[in-house]
Length: 393
Image 1 (cartoon, one colour):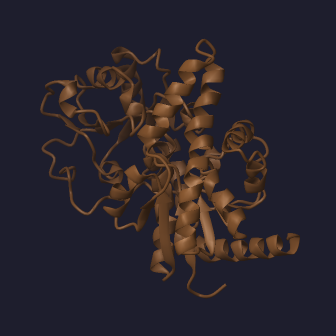
Image 2 (cartoon, one colour):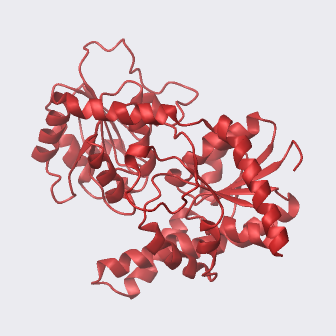
Protein backbone atom coordinates (compact mmCIF):
# COMPACT_ATOMS: atom_id res chain seq x y z
CA UNK A 1 0.00 0.00 0.00
CA UNK A 2 1.14 3.58 -0.63
CA UNK A 3 1.98 5.92 2.22
CA UNK A 4 -1.19 7.92 1.62
CA UNK A 5 -4.27 5.76 1.61
CA UNK A 6 -8.01 6.16 1.19
CA UNK A 7 -9.95 4.98 4.23
CA UNK A 8 -13.74 4.68 4.13
CA UNK A 9 -15.44 4.55 7.53
CA UNK A 10 -19.06 3.44 7.62
CA UNK A 11 -21.61 3.08 10.41
CA UNK A 12 -25.30 2.93 11.22
CA UNK A 13 -26.81 6.42 11.52
CA UNK A 14 -26.81 6.49 15.32
CA UNK A 15 -24.51 8.48 17.59
CA UNK A 16 -23.58 5.41 19.64
CA UNK A 17 -22.28 3.67 16.52
CA UNK A 18 -20.64 6.70 14.91
CA UNK A 19 -18.87 8.57 17.69
CA UNK A 20 -16.57 5.69 18.77
CA UNK A 21 -15.08 5.72 15.24
CA UNK A 22 -13.98 9.35 15.43
CA UNK A 23 -10.64 8.95 17.26
CA UNK A 24 -9.37 6.49 14.63
CA UNK A 25 -10.87 8.54 11.81
CA UNK A 26 -9.14 11.69 13.10
CA UNK A 27 -5.87 9.82 13.62
CA UNK A 28 -5.99 8.75 9.96
CA UNK A 29 -6.69 12.30 8.84
CA UNK A 30 -3.85 13.66 10.98
CA UNK A 31 -1.49 11.06 9.50
CA UNK A 32 -2.26 12.47 6.02
CA UNK A 33 -4.64 9.79 4.73
CA UNK A 34 -7.69 10.59 2.60
CA UNK A 35 -10.70 9.76 4.77
CA UNK A 36 -14.46 9.68 4.27
CA UNK A 37 -17.37 8.62 6.47
CA UNK A 38 -20.55 7.07 5.03
CA UNK A 39 -23.72 6.85 7.11
CA UNK A 40 -27.41 7.73 6.97
CA UNK A 41 -28.31 11.11 5.42
CA UNK A 42 -29.63 12.41 8.76
CA UNK A 43 -26.20 12.15 10.39
CA UNK A 44 -24.25 13.93 7.65
CA UNK A 45 -24.94 17.38 9.12
CA UNK A 46 -23.95 16.49 12.69
CA UNK A 47 -20.77 14.79 11.47
CA UNK A 48 -19.78 17.64 9.14
CA UNK A 49 -20.35 20.04 12.06
CA UNK A 50 -17.56 18.05 13.74
CA UNK A 51 -15.32 18.64 10.69
CA UNK A 52 -15.78 15.04 9.52
CA UNK A 53 -16.06 14.51 5.72
CA UNK A 54 -19.39 12.67 5.83
CA UNK A 55 -21.61 11.36 3.00
CA UNK A 56 -25.18 10.09 3.12
CA UNK A 57 -26.09 6.55 2.07
CA UNK A 58 -29.20 4.47 2.67
CA UNK A 59 -32.05 5.44 4.97
CA UNK A 60 -32.23 7.82 7.90
CA UNK A 61 -32.53 6.41 11.42
CA UNK A 62 -36.17 7.55 11.64
CA UNK A 63 -36.97 5.75 8.39
CA UNK A 64 -35.24 2.61 9.64
CA UNK A 65 -37.16 2.70 12.93
CA UNK A 66 -40.48 3.29 11.15
CA UNK A 67 -39.91 0.22 8.97
CA UNK A 68 -38.93 -1.79 12.05
CA UNK A 69 -42.07 -0.73 13.89
CA UNK A 70 -44.27 -1.63 10.93
CA UNK A 71 -42.66 -5.07 10.65
CA UNK A 72 -42.79 -5.73 14.39
CA UNK A 73 -46.48 -4.83 14.57
CA UNK A 74 -47.31 -7.58 12.08
CA UNK A 75 -45.68 -10.48 13.88
CA UNK A 76 -44.90 -11.89 17.30
CA UNK A 77 -46.68 -9.14 19.20
CA UNK A 78 -46.72 -11.24 22.39
CA UNK A 79 -43.18 -12.69 22.12
CA UNK A 80 -40.54 -10.25 23.43
CA UNK A 81 -37.59 -12.37 22.27
CA UNK A 82 -39.04 -12.58 18.77
CA UNK A 83 -39.65 -8.82 18.82
CA UNK A 84 -35.98 -8.21 19.68
CA UNK A 85 -34.86 -10.39 16.78
CA UNK A 86 -37.19 -8.57 14.39
CA UNK A 87 -35.84 -5.28 15.73
CA UNK A 88 -32.19 -6.24 15.24
CA UNK A 89 -32.87 -7.65 11.79
CA UNK A 90 -34.58 -4.47 10.62
CA UNK A 91 -32.40 -1.88 12.38
CA UNK A 92 -29.12 -3.42 11.29
CA UNK A 93 -29.57 -6.22 8.74
CA UNK A 94 -32.12 -4.76 6.36
CA UNK A 95 -30.72 -1.26 6.87
CA UNK A 96 -27.18 -2.39 5.97
CA UNK A 97 -28.47 -3.90 2.73
CA UNK A 98 -30.15 -0.57 1.93
CA UNK A 99 -26.84 1.25 2.45
CA UNK A 100 -24.90 -1.02 0.12
CA UNK A 101 -25.97 0.62 -3.20
CA UNK A 102 -24.99 4.03 -1.86
CA UNK A 103 -21.68 2.66 -0.62
CA UNK A 104 -20.99 1.13 -4.02
CA UNK A 105 -21.82 4.40 -5.73
CA UNK A 106 -19.51 6.36 -3.40
CA UNK A 107 -16.73 3.81 -3.88
CA UNK A 108 -17.20 3.96 -7.64
CA UNK A 109 -16.43 7.68 -7.59
CA UNK A 110 -13.75 7.46 -4.88
CA UNK A 111 -12.25 4.00 -4.53
CA UNK A 112 -11.08 3.30 -0.97
CA UNK A 113 -8.10 1.13 -0.04
CA UNK A 114 -9.58 -0.03 3.28
CA UNK A 115 -13.12 -0.11 4.73
CA UNK A 116 -13.51 0.44 8.49
CA UNK A 117 -16.95 -0.33 9.89
CA UNK A 118 -18.66 -0.92 13.23
CA UNK A 119 -19.78 -4.50 14.08
CA UNK A 120 -23.41 -4.10 13.03
CA UNK A 121 -22.67 -2.23 9.79
CA UNK A 122 -22.42 -5.31 7.62
CA UNK A 123 -22.78 -3.13 4.55
CA UNK A 124 -19.11 -2.28 5.00
CA UNK A 125 -18.12 -5.95 4.84
CA UNK A 126 -20.26 -6.53 1.74
CA UNK A 127 -18.77 -3.45 0.07
CA UNK A 128 -15.23 -4.64 0.79
CA UNK A 129 -15.98 -8.03 -0.76
CA UNK A 130 -17.50 -6.44 -3.87
CA UNK A 131 -14.33 -4.39 -4.35
CA UNK A 132 -11.82 -7.02 -3.22
CA UNK A 133 -10.69 -4.78 -0.34
CA UNK A 134 -9.74 -5.50 3.27
CA UNK A 135 -12.21 -4.47 5.96
CA UNK A 136 -11.65 -3.72 9.64
CA UNK A 137 -14.31 -4.11 12.34
CA UNK A 138 -14.18 -1.25 14.84
CA UNK A 139 -15.94 -2.02 18.12
CA UNK A 140 -18.24 0.56 19.72
CA UNK A 141 -18.33 -1.13 23.13
CA UNK A 142 -17.73 -4.53 24.70
CA UNK A 143 -17.90 -7.30 22.08
CA UNK A 144 -20.28 -9.58 23.96
CA UNK A 145 -20.62 -13.27 23.20
CA UNK A 146 -24.34 -12.68 22.65
CA UNK A 147 -23.40 -11.09 19.33
CA UNK A 148 -22.38 -14.59 18.25
CA UNK A 149 -26.08 -15.51 18.29
CA UNK A 150 -27.45 -12.18 17.13
CA UNK A 151 -24.95 -11.61 14.33
CA UNK A 152 -26.02 -14.45 12.01
CA UNK A 153 -29.64 -13.33 12.34
CA UNK A 154 -28.71 -9.78 11.37
CA UNK A 155 -26.59 -11.16 8.51
CA UNK A 156 -29.51 -13.21 7.26
CA UNK A 157 -31.61 -10.06 7.01
CA UNK A 158 -29.03 -8.51 4.66
CA UNK A 159 -29.67 -11.30 2.15
CA UNK A 160 -26.04 -12.38 2.52
CA UNK A 161 -25.99 -14.88 5.45
CA UNK A 162 -22.25 -15.61 5.23
CA UNK A 163 -21.23 -12.00 5.82
CA UNK A 164 -21.10 -12.40 9.62
CA UNK A 165 -18.59 -15.27 9.54
CA UNK A 166 -16.63 -13.34 6.94
CA UNK A 167 -16.41 -10.38 9.32
CA UNK A 168 -15.33 -12.58 12.25
CA UNK A 169 -12.39 -13.82 10.18
CA UNK A 170 -11.02 -10.32 9.62
CA UNK A 171 -9.14 -7.68 11.60
CA UNK A 172 -10.92 -6.06 14.56
CA UNK A 173 -10.34 -3.20 16.99
CA UNK A 174 -11.56 -3.73 20.56
CA UNK A 175 -12.18 -0.61 22.67
CA UNK A 176 -13.27 -2.56 25.77
CA UNK A 177 -10.91 -2.44 28.80
CA UNK A 178 -10.00 -5.81 30.38
CA UNK A 179 -12.23 -5.35 33.45
CA UNK A 180 -15.36 -5.16 31.27
CA UNK A 181 -14.58 -7.96 28.84
CA UNK A 182 -17.14 -10.75 29.06
CA UNK A 183 -16.00 -14.13 30.35
CA UNK A 184 -15.35 -16.94 27.90
CA UNK A 185 -13.94 -17.04 24.41
CA UNK A 186 -13.73 -13.71 22.57
CA UNK A 187 -15.45 -13.21 19.22
CA UNK A 188 -12.19 -11.75 17.88
CA UNK A 189 -9.42 -13.45 19.92
CA UNK A 190 -6.69 -11.45 18.17
CA UNK A 191 -8.43 -8.07 18.12
CA UNK A 192 -6.19 -5.03 18.53
CA UNK A 193 -6.79 -3.16 21.78
CA UNK A 194 -7.72 0.49 21.21
CA UNK A 195 -8.30 3.10 23.90
CA UNK A 196 -11.93 4.32 24.00
CA UNK A 197 -12.75 7.99 24.19
CA UNK A 198 -14.81 9.95 26.70
CA UNK A 199 -16.09 11.99 23.77
CA UNK A 200 -15.14 15.29 22.23
CA UNK A 201 -15.45 18.36 24.44
CA UNK A 202 -16.76 20.52 21.60
CA UNK A 203 -15.46 23.77 20.17
CA UNK A 204 -17.45 26.04 22.48
CA UNK A 205 -18.34 25.82 26.13
CA UNK A 206 -22.04 25.17 26.59
CA UNK A 207 -22.06 25.14 30.39
CA UNK A 208 -19.85 26.66 33.05
CA UNK A 209 -19.01 23.55 35.04
CA UNK A 210 -15.56 24.54 36.25
CA UNK A 211 -14.17 25.69 39.61
CA UNK A 212 -16.36 28.80 39.47
CA UNK A 213 -19.36 26.89 40.84
CA UNK A 214 -20.55 28.66 44.00
CA UNK A 215 -20.61 25.50 46.11
CA UNK A 216 -18.32 22.52 45.75
CA UNK A 217 -21.00 19.88 45.87
CA UNK A 218 -21.01 16.58 43.98
CA UNK A 219 -21.99 16.97 40.36
CA UNK A 220 -24.30 14.24 39.06
CA UNK A 221 -24.79 13.91 35.30
CA UNK A 222 -28.06 12.33 34.09
CA UNK A 223 -28.55 11.21 30.50
CA UNK A 224 -30.55 8.64 28.54
CA UNK A 225 -28.51 9.10 25.37
CA UNK A 226 -30.01 9.73 21.95
CA UNK A 227 -32.41 6.77 21.55
CA UNK A 228 -33.45 5.59 25.03
CA UNK A 229 -34.26 9.22 25.85
CA UNK A 230 -37.64 8.67 24.21
CA UNK A 231 -38.80 6.24 26.94
CA UNK A 232 -41.88 7.97 28.41
CA UNK A 233 -41.50 9.19 31.97
CA UNK A 234 -38.12 7.60 32.77
CA UNK A 235 -36.09 10.83 32.82
CA UNK A 236 -38.75 12.55 34.92
CA UNK A 237 -38.56 9.73 37.48
CA UNK A 238 -34.78 10.14 37.71
CA UNK A 239 -34.89 13.92 38.11
CA UNK A 240 -37.68 13.75 40.66
CA UNK A 241 -35.59 11.40 42.76
CA UNK A 242 -32.40 13.47 42.59
CA UNK A 243 -33.35 17.15 42.71
CA UNK A 244 -33.90 17.09 46.47
CA UNK A 245 -30.30 15.94 47.11
CA UNK A 246 -27.51 18.36 47.94
CA UNK A 247 -25.85 17.91 44.56
CA UNK A 248 -25.45 19.90 41.37
CA UNK A 249 -27.50 18.10 38.75
CA UNK A 250 -26.86 18.34 34.99
CA UNK A 251 -29.49 16.67 32.81
CA UNK A 252 -29.45 16.23 29.03
CA UNK A 253 -32.75 15.24 27.46
CA UNK A 254 -31.39 14.30 24.03
CA UNK A 255 -32.79 14.89 20.53
CA UNK A 256 -36.53 15.29 20.16
CA UNK A 257 -37.17 15.91 23.86
CA UNK A 258 -37.75 19.50 24.95
CA UNK A 259 -35.99 20.31 28.26
CA UNK A 260 -39.11 22.26 29.22
CA UNK A 261 -41.02 18.95 29.29
CA UNK A 262 -39.39 18.24 32.68
CA UNK A 263 -41.04 21.35 34.12
CA UNK A 264 -39.53 24.04 36.36
CA UNK A 265 -36.41 23.00 38.26
CA UNK A 266 -34.51 24.45 41.24
CA UNK A 267 -31.37 26.49 40.62
CA UNK A 268 -28.98 23.59 41.21
CA UNK A 269 -30.59 21.56 38.38
CA UNK A 270 -29.47 22.43 34.84
CA UNK A 271 -31.42 20.86 31.96
CA UNK A 272 -30.21 21.05 28.36
CA UNK A 273 -31.12 19.10 25.25
CA UNK A 274 -27.47 18.44 24.46
CA UNK A 275 -24.07 19.05 26.01
CA UNK A 276 -20.84 17.48 24.66
CA UNK A 277 -20.38 14.47 26.93
CA UNK A 278 -16.78 15.07 27.87
CA UNK A 279 -17.53 18.70 28.71
CA UNK A 280 -19.67 17.42 31.59
CA UNK A 281 -17.70 14.31 32.53
CA UNK A 282 -14.52 16.30 33.21
CA UNK A 283 -16.32 17.91 36.16
CA UNK A 284 -18.76 15.19 37.22
CA UNK A 285 -18.57 12.92 40.26
CA UNK A 286 -21.17 10.39 39.15
CA UNK A 287 -23.24 9.49 36.11
CA UNK A 288 -26.79 8.15 35.92
CA UNK A 289 -27.61 6.67 32.51
CA UNK A 290 -29.13 3.97 30.33
CA UNK A 291 -25.70 2.24 30.06
CA UNK A 292 -25.31 2.77 26.34
CA UNK A 293 -21.82 1.61 25.35
CA UNK A 294 -20.36 5.04 24.57
CA UNK A 295 -21.95 6.66 27.60
CA UNK A 296 -20.83 3.88 29.93
CA UNK A 297 -17.26 3.82 28.61
CA UNK A 298 -17.10 7.61 28.61
CA UNK A 299 -17.78 7.73 32.34
CA UNK A 300 -15.13 5.11 33.02
CA UNK A 301 -12.60 7.05 30.90
CA UNK A 302 -13.00 9.71 33.61
CA UNK A 303 -13.02 7.25 36.51
CA UNK A 304 -16.68 7.89 37.40
CA UNK A 305 -18.94 5.40 39.16
CA UNK A 306 -22.39 5.13 37.64
CA UNK A 307 -25.98 4.16 38.18
CA UNK A 308 -27.14 2.10 35.20
CA UNK A 309 -30.81 1.85 34.22
CA UNK A 310 -30.63 -0.29 31.05
CA UNK A 311 -33.50 -0.45 28.61
CA UNK A 312 -32.63 -2.66 25.62
CA UNK A 313 -30.08 -3.56 22.94
CA UNK A 314 -26.65 -4.09 24.57
CA UNK A 315 -27.48 -1.93 27.59
CA UNK A 316 -28.25 -4.79 30.04
CA UNK A 317 -24.93 -6.45 29.11
CA UNK A 318 -23.06 -3.17 29.59
CA UNK A 319 -24.71 -2.61 32.95
CA UNK A 320 -23.85 -6.14 34.06
CA UNK A 321 -20.21 -5.51 33.08
CA UNK A 322 -20.12 -2.33 35.19
CA UNK A 323 -21.59 -4.18 38.16
CA UNK A 324 -19.12 -7.04 37.68
CA UNK A 325 -16.28 -4.51 37.82
CA UNK A 326 -17.84 -3.11 41.04
CA UNK A 327 -17.91 0.34 39.45
CA UNK A 328 -21.64 0.93 39.70
CA UNK A 329 -25.16 -0.11 40.64
CA UNK A 330 -27.85 -1.42 38.28
CA UNK A 331 -31.59 -0.76 38.50
CA UNK A 332 -34.06 -2.27 36.09
CA UNK A 333 -36.69 -0.01 34.53
CA UNK A 334 -39.29 -1.57 36.84
CA UNK A 335 -37.13 -0.75 39.86
CA UNK A 336 -36.51 2.83 38.72
CA UNK A 337 -38.67 4.78 41.15
CA UNK A 338 -37.62 8.21 42.43
CA UNK A 339 -36.88 6.73 45.85
CA UNK A 340 -34.76 3.90 44.41
CA UNK A 341 -32.76 6.28 42.19
CA UNK A 342 -32.14 8.63 45.12
CA UNK A 343 -31.03 5.75 47.39
CA UNK A 344 -28.68 4.32 44.75
CA UNK A 345 -27.04 7.69 44.10
CA UNK A 346 -26.58 8.31 47.84
CA UNK A 347 -24.91 4.90 48.13
CA UNK A 348 -22.63 5.56 45.15
CA UNK A 349 -21.57 8.96 46.46
CA UNK A 350 -21.02 7.85 50.04
CA UNK A 351 -19.23 4.53 49.38
CA UNK A 352 -15.63 5.12 48.21
CA UNK A 353 -15.30 1.56 46.88
CA UNK A 354 -17.29 2.40 43.73
CA UNK A 355 -15.00 5.30 42.82
CA UNK A 356 -11.92 3.19 43.58
CA UNK A 357 -13.19 0.46 41.23
CA UNK A 358 -14.08 3.00 38.53
CA UNK A 359 -10.59 4.49 38.74
CA UNK A 360 -9.09 1.04 38.39
CA UNK A 361 -10.98 0.66 35.12
CA UNK A 362 -9.85 4.17 34.15
CA UNK A 363 -6.22 3.10 34.68
CA UNK A 364 -6.78 0.11 32.39
CA UNK A 365 -8.22 2.42 29.73
CA UNK A 366 -5.31 4.85 29.97
CA UNK A 367 -2.89 1.95 29.52
CA UNK A 368 -4.54 0.98 26.20
CA UNK A 369 -2.86 2.26 23.01
CA UNK A 370 -4.21 5.39 21.33
CA UNK A 371 -5.65 5.54 17.83
CA UNK A 372 -2.46 7.19 16.60
CA UNK A 373 -0.46 4.23 17.94
CA UNK A 374 -2.83 1.56 16.59
CA UNK A 375 -3.33 3.04 13.11
CA UNK A 376 -0.08 1.71 11.52
CA UNK A 377 -0.69 -1.81 12.85
CA UNK A 378 -4.31 -1.72 11.68
CA UNK A 379 -3.23 -0.79 8.15
CA UNK A 380 -0.50 -3.44 8.20
CA UNK A 381 -3.04 -6.13 9.09
CA UNK A 382 -5.46 -4.79 6.47
CA UNK A 383 -2.70 -5.10 3.88
CA UNK A 384 -2.11 -8.68 5.00
CA UNK A 385 -5.82 -9.46 4.73
CA UNK A 386 -5.90 -8.09 1.19
CA UNK A 387 -3.02 -10.36 0.25
CA UNK A 388 -4.83 -13.37 1.69
CA UNK A 389 -7.99 -12.47 -0.25
CA UNK A 390 -6.00 -12.23 -3.51
CA UNK A 391 -4.49 -15.66 -2.92
CA UNK A 392 -7.93 -17.12 -2.14
CA UNK A 393 -9.31 -15.56 -5.30
